[in-house]
Length: 167
Image (tube, rainbow, N blue to C red; front, side, top):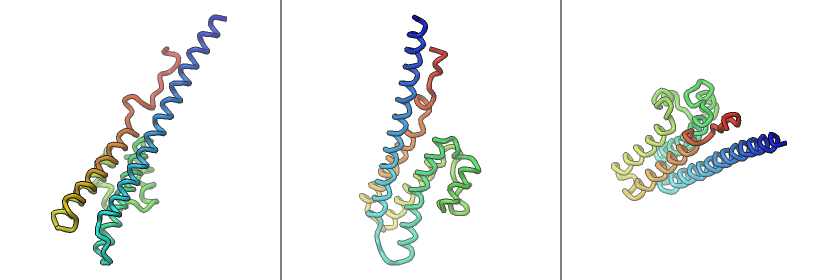
């Protein structure tokens, strides 16, 4: 009888811990979804909306990069960021240009993309296309997105439940 109580207690703790980690991961995913939506909104609102082809392509590229960064963060959380399966998924979604995959840093590809957004924002500011304030807002939105992606992917204290047999 005492063994039943002990087993139930141990299994209950294991299940509780597993559910907690799942909820934490789910909340981090939802937060990252909000982060990419914020970044997309900032890009859409802060870049000039001229009718010329250059402005259209600039906006299209930066929006694609925002979604690419999101998808790469999800792939990283699934341990697929550097795999051919991950690359195929991104190609299928139309998020990669022909030469971009090789420019991304292995294991940290999403950070590379967020850096591209920040670098492009700085370039646009130096060219006088956007103001310094708009450049700062875009860079902050990209940095926040990168931070939220890091929370999603953190394996230091998440995703690895303690086996109940070690308790």
